[in-house]
Image (tube, rainbow, N blue to C red; front, top):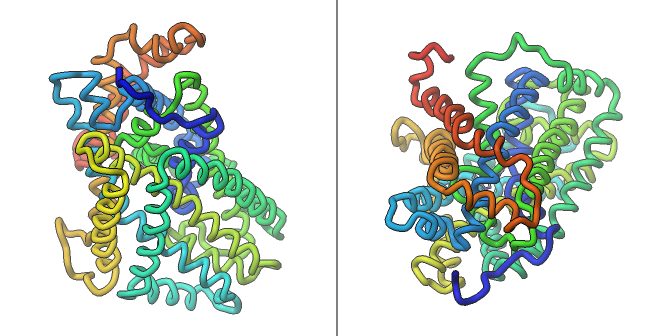
Length: 455
Ligand code: TRP
């Protein structure tokens, strides 16, 4: 055990707020609703929830266990728990994945700031879909504007990271997460009471299983990973800050429920409005940035709602970006022995470089391709299609087959303090179900799915 006591989140609420802050992000509010729209509404939702339970919860619990047992950053935790082995490479993979996710995620996060600005300047009013599309395309392909917002966003995140775990992460998420829940519930109520909104609710809650193909099933699984921040050591790092007084499995249930609830609430806020205004639900990634301003422009009180909505999106992105940065900063501080300040500055500079590459790849550098993709798509694809599933697979194998069953039981029960009724189910899931499910996703994404007749 280390000589000095590791910094812990100071309360149960702080733990849940920080972990939920990481999980709830652009993945819930921007990506989930449009995937739902494209993949058939309620049927996709049911399959998604199934994966969250079967795959998301066991991996999140595994990550918390590894982090709290290891009492270290993601690389250090594997080193401590499996000395002499090569498992720490999972941690290095996580650090690289963090950089790459941040490279494109913070660009989109920057866009949310531009849209807060546009909302405040009342830019959406009396514009039709075609005009709003043009506005979005002109902005996102511009050379300087998105980069300026990217810089603003990253500097705010870096400021919070520099303040550290207690004053930065804990204080900000404890304040920002409840704010987010309030705004999204208000938006949901507004949307549901729009004329014709019930059509949208029917779309969300009446399953049409004919739309489900194996490709849709596998997308739902990928979304579960991304949305819960799993597979790259984010929850290992946060797990290491959870005090021994917390009941890990309760935390997992709370965070997962909150993440799923916010994704569903986002959909409830979006689809009734989409249907009420006769917009195509299968719109795609532009849904938030093009369709919603259109919705707000035509909705009573739309000025205020649009401002609230984009603030919500930005706040959600902020708490996720903080968690991604913390993975790298904790690694640099604990393994490379940099000062927290130096580590944060270094990470900020690298993210800015990656972010600029990603942002330019949508505009002036459209022609620059690596593996047939621009930087933005490249960062997005290799993380969600290769690194995260592979990380999740290895994390569940590590927990199920490398850690001793006795030590897992000790950790879950905090030396007998808490009951562990679900313990056998958990071991079964991480040993068999989770690795098999993830292997199927990987096979599918490597293109072997077609060959095996899966899609
Ligand atoms: N889960 C966040 C979202 O839904 C994004 C995120 C934060 C993330 N940390 C992560 C995704 C770690 C994968 C891994 O927007």
